[in-house]
Length: 469
Ligand SMILES: Cc1cc2nc3c(=O)[nH]c(=O)nc-3n(C[C@H](O)[C@H](O)[C@H](O)COP(=O)(O)OP(=O)(O)OC[C@H]3O[C@@H](n4cnc5c(N)ncnc54)[C@H](O)[C@@H]3O)c2cc1C
Image (cartoon, rainbow, N blue to C red):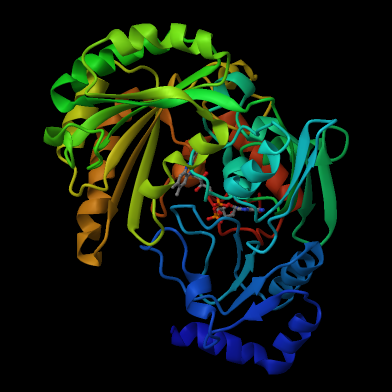
């Protein structure tokens, strides 16, 4: 236990904490409580912070009480959704954490084709609720990720090229602002705030619920191909050629990662570095087969696991590869092209990874993502054809230095071809922080919005956009 967090809780005093608790339906957890250790842990095991109070919020009123309490007691304030962000801003030292994880309700409106999602719901909660209606939201690729953090930062995933990013599909949001007021952001109310919530991250308040557009997606044609590393360079060259002319229904991710020791994998490839092409097609099955024929015929994939599957299953298919508690450091780069130098950097970089948990994903962008005007939302770098995520993981603290150095090295080599970074993939020590995620015009607009909605920077534990002083 951190003495400091304990001291802050003691300084607040039992009477003050009792006042907070009296305003809550949820619980206020302090150092020494049985649940404290489990509640301060997040997905990235490298983050080890000790809050003075963790408030398990059950409703919007709990969030209002927590915001007011943090402000009046001058406590650092962190907001936790799914707890998946690699930078670890969901927890803080010696301050108050608004933990939204009890707020997971999802209400589907099948007529309007929307879902009202509470701020602590995971992608799994959302997918569970929508599939019963034969619909899906455009979100991300791992079901334990929080809808809140993913959507506010952008939200890249399998349906993005057909239906846009998660943030493009926010219809409205309920937001508790820095002064403890509840406001709605939509096209007709506080539309400037809606613009900022579409990519600007958690800078503007606590989003207690999001109304998201849904789409008629049930079965997808999906899965993966695996190639031995000897073929990686030529397959990545072909991947680039193939990606230039794919229908919007198709979204691909090339991934240089460890091949699992599964029965369907030839023995000589198991536990080795390999090249995956991960696939999802959300249109007709015949059209999917037709579109994928040239890709499947290229080279000699050692594994071809493509076929129809429920979208709901695809959303959980890669969960096991990302267990909570390992130690992670990520870098991301939007690149102008997957040119020869970039392919060489990626193939050589992957071969030099320090642990088997390290991987490089090359997300195909374009389609509906690139057709939204650059100034229509806060999300940056929409015109990049690829988003590269270099992520390193380890188990033991003594491996941290190598784990942090490797993605930095790969990203530094990509720099001449890079236009920026994805805010949701930024690590804690990305010094340029949010500036990397937005074009300069967008950044200036975000500063103005921050100055309007959070002039004292109460919500600063995020990839922060400081207000004008
Ligand atoms: C295994 C894994 C897979 C991922 N896959 C994808 C993917 O496919 N696509 C993609 O785009 N991203 C993906 N991400 C990145 C993910 O989008 C970000 O980490 C995101 O911030 C996670 O949101 P969260 O609510 O789980 O995180 P948290 O750590 O709880 O929150 C992150 C930050 O978001 C803000 N925040 C969260 N909820 C709220 C809210 N309700 N109101 C206000 N602010 C809030 C806060 O500032 C908080 O510090 C993945 C991450 C992991 C670890």
